[in-house]
Length: 43
Image (cartoon, rainbow, N blue to C red; front, side, top):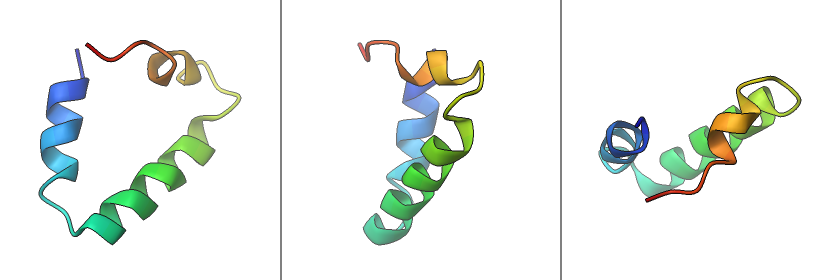
């Protein structure tokens, strides 16, 4: 659902920036209801 959009956006960034951004967001959503979204299997 959201994966193709997020993937395309992240691949537009510098690799180091994309990596840091991804892990920042994962830390922010840990322990929230949104955590279930990232635990879904990627197609």
